[in-house]
Image (tube, rainbow over all chains, first blue to last red; front, side):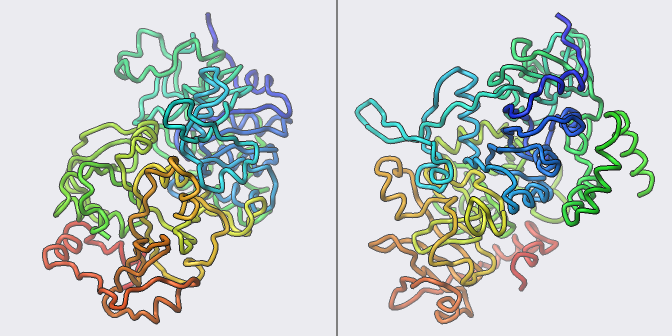
Amino acid sequence: MDKRTTAAAVVSELRDGMTLGIGGWGSRRKPMALVREILRSPVRDLTVVSYGGPDVGLLCAAGKVRKLVYGFVSLDSIPLEPHFRKAREAGAFEAAELDEGMLQWGLYAAALRLPFLPTRAGLGSSVMDVNPALRTVRSPYADGEELVAMPALPLDVAIVHMNRADARGNGQFLGPDPYFDDLYCMAAKRRFLSCEQIVDTREFAKFGSVHTLKINRTMVDGVVETPNGAHFTECPPDYGRDEAFQREYAATAKSADAWAEFRARFLDVESEAAYQEAVRAWRGTK
Amino acid sequence: MADAFRGDGEILVSCFGTVPAIGARLARLTFAPDLLLTDGIAHLLADVQPVSGKPSGDPVIEGWLPFRAVFDLLWSGRRHVVMMASQIDRFGNHNFACIGPHARPKAQLLGMRGAPGNTVSHPTSYWVPAHTAKVFVEQVDVVSGVGYDRAAKLGAGARFHEIRRVVSNLGVFDFATDDRTMRLASLHPGVTLDDVRAATSFPLATDADVATTREPTAEELRLIRDVLDPERLRDREVPS
């Protein structure tokens, strides 16, 4: 089956109030082209599940987030995502904050269609207070240990970004870390993969070992080719993080005017191609 | 700081902050050769890389540790983490998540990150480069890392909980007291007990005769200055 599609077609499946999972980690291999397409759409009131980076910051700044499920939101080289920080301090969304490992467990439980998975992570911390729906469970065995029952985090839609994919939805990561992208896909009803390049299935072996084929086609409904589509996050070995552009983006959290200007120049543009062109033009002025 | 890892054996050390990163590398180069160190990306490094200046050749990778494997490893307990603290109380409850109420923080900080899971899974130490009464507080606003009073209520769930030590620019602290409240273990050379008390919002347990933190040996100084941090990145954390 040929699953090639477009960013616009992917985002047309989103409805107000849906739960959206976003792959990657911090400012690393984020499906930014699809995030930018969401920013250009009217969709709102999203519940976003993410190991957060600028994906979360941008969606917060654009007022798209009703609830955020997360363990952190960071730009890596800038430890705290400034747009996320601003939205948090304004009380702009419901903050379902978890331990990082609990987030993985929730996605994994949803992927395996289990109601919850047990863990010690969270016990004794404020995570239990700020998420009053969290429950503990007692081991039915002789130890009788009480553990957090991390509930499944089922997603309506998952979006992830890969280095390579084929038209049928097999995905290949070529960087050092697969992150949790396979779990996002397995936890979601509709799963969309953007990639740097769509290649013939036979070509995967040329780019990396079999271990890099972490996403198989049972996990994917649509594939979008978006060259430089993780920009400005890193997507090694294809490209590193655009630190200069990230700094420019981060600085726009300081004033409404700066954000409006950034938005007009880079986000409220016609298409991903127009974004990439605007970034090229910006780089030419530096 | 390096002394925090004495006797840790063959476990992963994860450090946040420059001084802990130097400490772990120093321990690895001297008295704790079996420690595992990462490059902060997804690799275990067989050699010891400096925190500043030129890398010592191409790093030798001895293992693959993507984030998923980090969670597995830390839940298995073979790890000692050093985190920085925005607030810490007398029982070692730790906060770097946010200042003010969680629902509407005055200042959003790092968030929970892995602190809840770390602190109930394996030894944890804390590093505070600027010891003040705003950091050493009566009560933390949000608990990201679990302290001894909260751990005591968890029963078996806390059997892997251990706060090894708290190191600040003024002294070294532990919880070697009957009620597991913070104790001044040693004062850094030149620091007085009054200095520490003035910069701490809660009553601190102290021994009648407070020890002085040991000075680095000549060889340790050489490793810090010439090998591990030739560009003095540490001065940005604690001005000398």
